[in-house]
Image (cartoon, rainbow, N blue to C red; front, top):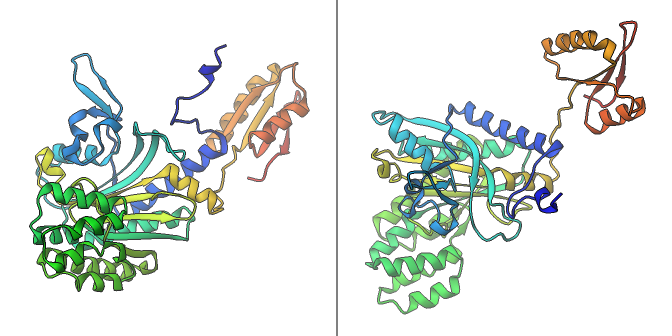
Length: 407
């Protein structure tokens, strides 16, 4: 046997036993919360045409996608995220719908990036998209839904950081900077190189108040007072509108009772022009990156022929599972209820018992005894595999029931 055949490629892994049960529990809880908000399930393919995810859609760099070709030589990619697929589907199936659409999903995504800090090339996302609604109320709803989702997993210590790219865009437009300069500033902010940003901005031929605003992103994070600080730095209408919208979102989240879970970070901008307004990320202890990312992307559906303002989020379930474990949150593991052990002669009796138990909604597995294994070995097997009961079918038709695990 070639030992290499037993191992997975770099960036992917097997998930099994209790870990798989816990992951399924988390996914079910997340989707349950989305359903409570009225989001309806949608499933899209794991691979699509390359153009669905190209740079104009702001999805991922081309060199971070797994690409392959179909028999007609079309370039296909494994999806790096699911939102562009939802946008394509909404434009196709709900082209004439003008009232709000609430869609939710879960599935695997793939990213062909450098594997560092244990990053996965295949990962699971659960998310929701609110389409055809451009209100601050929809921004607040989507963030409230995120908070409900995280609370449903058992986490209590987390923070949702909120920004709005309109603030940055307003400063850039007021400065009259070209696209190349904007990209350079955007890159400095994205990688949090605020010293480099200050040095770069100091050499620009722009008014001093613009320089001050562009050099202040390292201080524009914290509580609601952050928005007042930011507002004092700008005079342009776009930036002020962005701040006013964040204040409305904050007020709505306070009405939900979730004010303690939010903070603000005006330096939160995307390297690509993906987000058009509110954007946010969720952090908790035990992870180096956000476990949830989202925001408003009002121009994405236009790429597929439908003008529809939209806001959404994606929860990175694998990172969330790591956070749950490191925060020592206990997730219940449902034990398989019954293991029926029988001899060849009792096969019909075992089938009848198993059918009865399954009819009552009890999960039941059957194993025919082998002369190669002892009763004690079967009991240990049941214990290791998490069965609640071992039911031994006797020759006289009676059943011996052994309680293995509580459940």
